Image 1 (cartoon, helix red, strand yellow):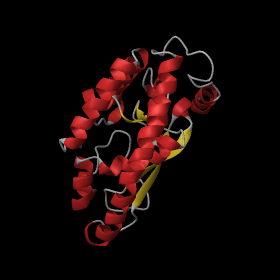
Image 2 (image 1 turned 180 degrees about the vertical axis):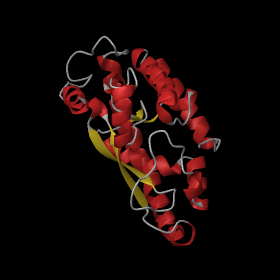
Image 3 (image 1 turned 90 degrees about the vertical axis):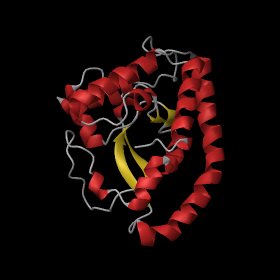
Length: 221
C-alpha cells in the first residue's frame, strides 16, 4: 500500500513544469523568481561555505572527531528521496537507530556541533542541494526518508507538502520549530500547507527576514 502511494506521488509532475496546481499560491513569475533567488544566494554563500569548511577541517579532530560532512537520505519534492548534506554536529555513528517518535539525541551533540547548530552553520552545505535543484532556501523542511514514509501513511496532508521543493528554512521552522512524532508533524504539515497555499513575494520576504534574525541572533536549535 505504501509503495503504491509513493509510486503515484513520485510520478506526478512538479508545480512549475506547466500550470501551477490550485493548491499552490503565487504564480509562474513568483516561482521562477524564487528559483533564481535560490541560485543567486547559494552561489554567494559558496564564498562562505569554502572558508568555513577549511576552518572546520582544522577544528574537527579536536572538537568533533569524525567525518566533516553528514549525508542523510531525506524525502524531497514529489516524495522522491535525495541525499541532504550538512556539517556533522553529532558524534559519528554507523547506523541511525532513532525512531520517528523518539526525541533528538541531545547527548550526541558535540561542543563544536552545539555552536554550529546555534548559528545554523551546520545547514550551510545544503546550498549544494539547492544548486542541484533538490532543495530551496525556503520551503517545507525535508524529513529523514524512513521516518517520512511513516508520516506519509499516517499524517493527513503529508504527501501534499512535497509538491514543491523542500527548504533549508520555512514557515514550520519559524512557527512550530523542531518536531518529533506524528502529532507534532501534523502541526508542521498544517504550517507547510499554509505556506504553499499563500506562497508569494510577501510571505517569502518575511520568512527570509525571520531566518536571518534566527541565524544572526544565534537562536538555532
